[in-house]
Amino acid sequence: MNELSHIDNNGKANMVDVSNKTNQKRTAVAEGFISLATETLDIVKKNLVKKGDVISIAEIAGIMAAKRTPELIPLCHNLNLTKVDVKAEIQDDGIKVISSVACIGQTGVEMEALTAVSISLLTIYDMCKAVDKTMIIKEIKLLNKQKEDL
Image (cartoon, rainbow, N blue to C red; front, side):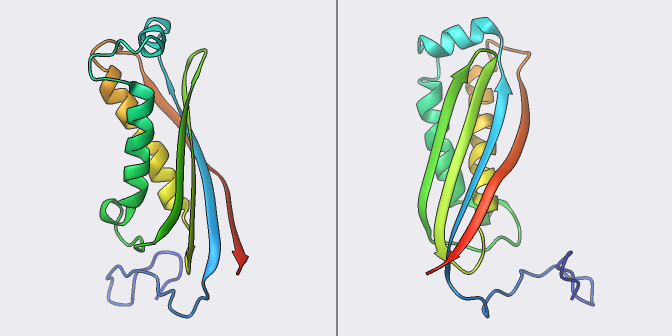
């Protein structure tokens, strides 16, 4: 099997076998950004978006998404997450979302952190699309991942 592509000799995709890896504390931090018009940011700050509190709902959506990552992304392992923290911060030209995810396991949580950010940003987009046609989701990236022996 090709280690990079996870395709076996018959051309079939396979989940990476981590059964020989030891459990470690694994963490990952990711971030992303959505640009919003000034008027939209004012509406968000004043909690006047018809669908509700954009910041709180986006944070909850990110947490829920991290927990469901293996259902959304093929070949991701089902992990027992021990922490998911998602913070949406209003800035001058949009909203930055930062997620932090942890588990005790045999593989990392970077996909969970990136999924949390992505879904949080998509939730903001969905909630604001009626008032802002200029939004751009960008700069979704992994900031840090670590593992440490128990």
